[in-house]
Image 1 (cartoon, one colour):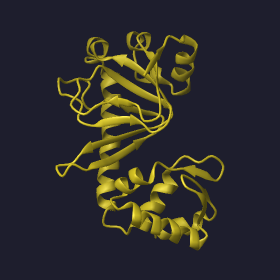
Image 2 (cartoon, rainbow, N blue to C red):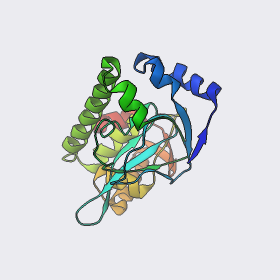
Image 3 (cartoon, rainbow, N blue to C red):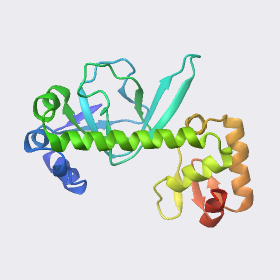
Image 4 (tube, rainbow, N blue to C red):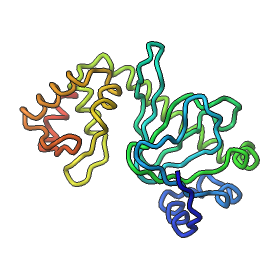
Length: 220
């Protein structure tokens, strides 16, 4: 992790994501810019939380260890999203591992500053509630979708990703398989199915969407 005191860059992201909507002047004043390398830990499970982060560029992977010792990926977050909103106003330790899926920039506020200037701010608290509600909906949707065939889940995931032209960049196959609730071997078979239908092509992890209609048809 590297910390930068680049006020110009901070203000550019504040304006880009209209962060004054939910951060009061004191919280805005204490924003700092953090850069995390790919595969670098943002949080370790059971760590004390020191910062509330706002993901403004890049991506992070959230995971935790299951009782059988396996790592389960349950979220891949991209801009704009909040990291650490569940625990920030409590004394609870961080409950998941968060690592950079690629080089990532985040704005952060020290947890003591958040408690001092945000704990009684209705605008800020409403923002945190909205963030948590959105994450709850996504989690419930993911659990419901586990009854769908993997090819349907994969099509839904691909269509939900940000596109550069007609290209999407996916996480590692191990992470994506965990997120979809399958194995990497079966994921490879499903990727080949989608390629054979003409819906996608390319070399993993960069895939080109050649026929959106085919992907949408899988979703009914």
